[in-house]
Length: 260
Length: 219
Length: 66
View 1 (spheres, one colour):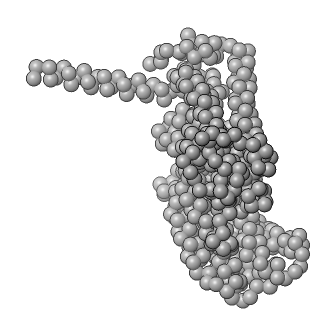
View 2: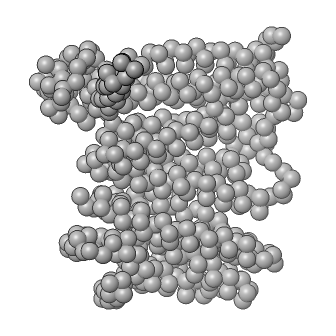
């Protein structure tokens, strides 16, 4: 048809333009203001979802048959545990991409994710202890889940410590990437070995920190809280990312030019 | 090339025999601390022996890891090795093998003696020996990644420990588990098989990861 | 189907409210420490003000350099 060639050219040019537009956001200096605009869009819904989730969890979900009211801790414990694991995997992916493609912003994202992930893992450990004491009698229980969470905490601490010990930011980025990738590959192995260890040392029939039978409203509250934690994480990680960008890029010419 | 590297590292280590011996002494001392801290009751000691011996082996390995690359790094040999046409992971493999021979094998050999302090039966002592024989290469291999990442950094030994000890945990679980199974009379072979599998996985991945880490640290 | 929970949570009050309090403290700490970090950076940069113009900090950048 008559319009064949020019249309194809226009489409190709548009695709090129979009790609180039997206790639520009790989630059820390350009992503900085975009991140700033994104933050409220995640922070405010996060706060709303936290409120909703807690409302459903405390006012609508009924007490558990076995654990009574004590199970309500899971509405913060379980989402925190999931976020801890999810953020570690994300951190490893961003770090790996930053290393493979030499993309500074991706590595900075990994560094930012690490702290929030560690925080959620810590919350998961502490709330797990608070859950264990009334339901099982001791503050700490060496079951597979708590032990694996503890090891995840160690992995986070290792990543953060390594990056803190290296002065050169690019070496810190790449070294962190190697460590995070080694960690991510080891996580299934570690998890399996902890399960193995756990079933060896206690009767297979006893399961400590048993989850309550999940009913509709409980599941709803759990999912709402998970979404809230997720949105909160995005907001906080972006805030920290902006701080990292400022700290690392302040003396580059890009920033100076961009401001003029 | 590999043989030359290993031989070179062994020769250098032999010239610093004291380092080798200090690792062994550390191991023996740490193991002896536990009965002192817990009490001499033999039944209890027999129960904790697998864990204690294995943890002491982990810690002793930790201490020796600093030496894996540091000496060559300080006198510039490491950078030269990076420039050779040989693939870097072979270099790493060679140095790791030498490290295992120098730092870990003495532990493996002395472990049965130490196990006697805990009143372990002869069969259990054999399993202890076997578990460490299969497990210590894992310690050297994974440790090499930590040593490569922390090359030249302040905070040295403690930083390596933070990085590497969590990764050692599967080896600890399977290794100590094998010895414990032997004490309780059940078969240690599932544990030893898993330990062996982990060793093979480490062998396949660690030299490559450590080589990448070396490049990163030396840029 | 709303049920008002009793505040003592059947005796488990300390553990439940304790958990949520700790989580709240952690979240607040994270946000506050980030705000302080940002403030420290901007103060530092205002002192050496030729490197980062205030327009960057306000986020009013619309163009890229080539």
